[in-house]
Structures are given as C-alpha cells and as structure tokens.
Image 1 (cartoon, one colour):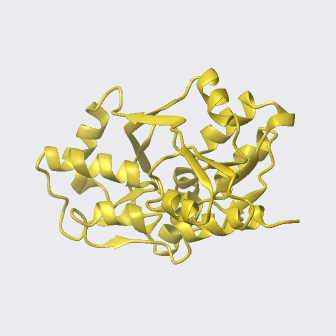
Image 2 (cartoon, helix red, strand yellow):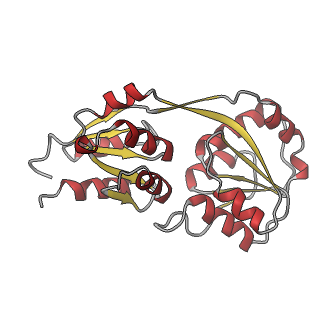
Image 3 (tube, helix red, strand yellow):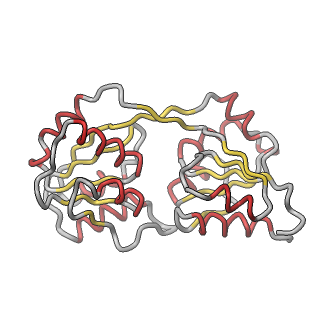
Length: 250
C-alpha cells in the first residue's frame, strides 16, 4: 500500500472489531473513529424482567448481537436468576456466543454465519428450524433490530417473544456530515448508519463505502449509495482485505 499513507479510513463503530484500527494503521493508513450510533438502556426494563422470571417457559433463547447478549445476561445476573439446566441459547456469531456461555449450556451457532446472500439473523433462524427447536423462543434484541430472525422462525411455526434490552441513538445530521469530511473510505457496520450517511453526504463528495455484512450493504444500496466493497465476514481480516483492495493502484 505504498504511496497511499494519506488514505483516511473513517470507522463509524469504534471498538466493534477489536484491533481493527491498529491493523489499518499498520497498513499505513490514517484511521478516524467516530461513533455515529450510541447505545443506552431501554426506556422500560419491565418486559425484559418479566421474560427473565419466565425463562423456564422458553424452549430456547436466540440472540443476534454481542450488545444484546451482554445487556440481557447482565440483567439476568442482576436478578440472580439461573436459566433451567440444559436450556439452549442460539447465537449468530462467536462474539455473541461468548457473552452467553456463563449462563447457558449449550450455546449453539449455525454452521455458516455470514454469506453475501443472507443476513446472520436469517441464517441463525434457519439453523434453529433445521435443529427442530421448540416453541416459544425468547429473542432479546435492540430497539432497531432486524425482522429476519423472528420472521423466519414464525414462518416455521415458532412463537417468538421479543424483548428490547438496549436502545440505539443516531448522531444528528450535522454531526454525521461533519464526520465524513476528508474521509477516503467510510467503514459502516450498521444499516441505520449507512442510511444516515447516504442522507447527509452529497453524491459528488462521497468516499468509498465499505459495508460489513450483506444487511448493511443492502441498506446502503437502498439509500442510493452502492458499496465499493462488502466484507465477506464480520472479522478484522475480512475488513482489512476489502480496504486493502481499494488502496491498490488501478
């Protein structure tokens, strides 16, 4: 990547992939990290708490993000509730599964986590149906979660109860617009951030957009900003590979 040390990569989800910023800087790139999406507790914990005290009623718990898994398990621990022995938890990825293992045994993952054709929620739901998971299923999630997992499970005859265990807040338009100034590459891992970025960025001033995952890529396209690259997996290696490809001379 010689000669491209001035390329500026703007990461909009600081800390979401541990070590990514350092890896990119090691490639000779300038990296700016700006949080365009922040997180906090739900407006009302009551639905989560009620589900926690009813855990024995659920045949499985399904979680599609590390943030949801962390918020839910912390709330369970605060109530000093132990899930029933052998109650299954299903996770969309390794980072999410790690958050669940202190409480649930077993924690199961789909054999294929991410493809360019389907989101992680759809793949997780399909794996659960293939394993003949029982009903009902508890789905701890954020307030802006995707519909994929509950939709696929319900289509398969599974009752799904959704409980919001964290909320997300987008940055103001002017803050997002200011953050994009001077960036050569915009790295986005959230569909909502992709939509926000497309809204505030003039078409003739847009940097190359790299999306982490097919769902974010689809949101960017729908907003009128086609990604220059899509990371095949939500890993540091996959993201670095995509950004490295953009930095090659043409």
